Image 1 (cartoon, rainbow, N blue to C red):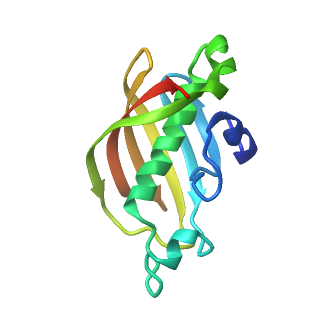
Image 2 (tube, rainbow, N blue to C red):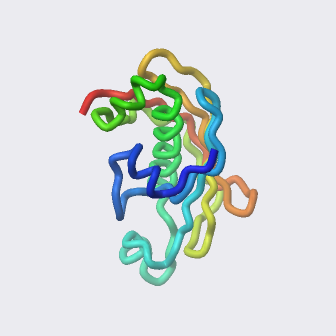
Length: 149
């Protein structure tokens, strides 16, 4: 299932400069999602992180994984739930076992791969991994809840 950024913006409330997923390239309802963000020197974050040595912040990688996971959660809702998605938002509950393996720099294509560890009601637990050129750069276990706005 290919989902472009226009469709992603219909699912997630995030907007520039905080929409951190450019495209969803694979989605298996209730199971997994894969997407990516093209990291460019034009990102506002590089003005301060760091001006002479631009490194994409780990917290932004985690947030991008969470946004991809949010797309998975919303697309995994039944049809009635998807219609109500505009009145819902995903909140972080916890970030566990986060590890940063390698720096992400301008020009990198950051690929997010998440799979469901557990899903019960509105709560989702996801195993998230981020890659650049098939090299693992970040991993974390993310727990989130879908709530009314």
